Length: 166
Image 1 (cartoon, rainbow, N blue to C red):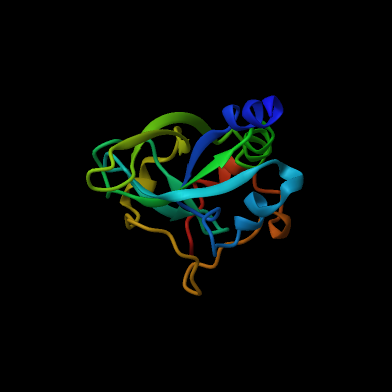
Image 2: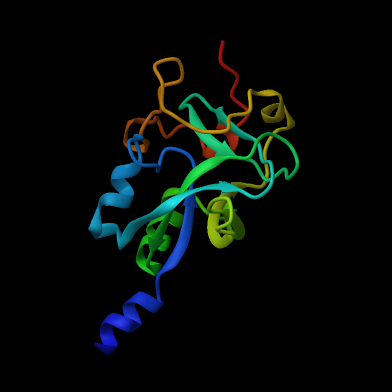
């Protein structure tokens, strides 16, 4: 019984609003128990407006750290363990591209807010702020998401943020 309590107490909340959401191209990463534990907890929105944009030649959704700009963004909260967070940190190029920080997420009228980890793009070209702001991400034929294993690695992530479609 103590092990179960210990495992449950080590779970943390993670807010995802892009390709990691259920039904989106990157969700298999959360669903793969080899990456760690992840269990859907509820839908939620950001408590403040943030710009969610699709950018790079790979059509990656980015949540920009620019509070007050954009929309209240709809996403999902998962309970995850440290192993999953570490797997996602590797995937999200934490340090180089994204940073992971705790922000309160709104879980519904009268339900209040919950602190969650969220991946934010801290350093980005200003031109990303001129892209359309989304309130919810869905992969589409117009901007098809390219999975990491299908990307050409000659474009470092930070450099690719400056990419402009022809």
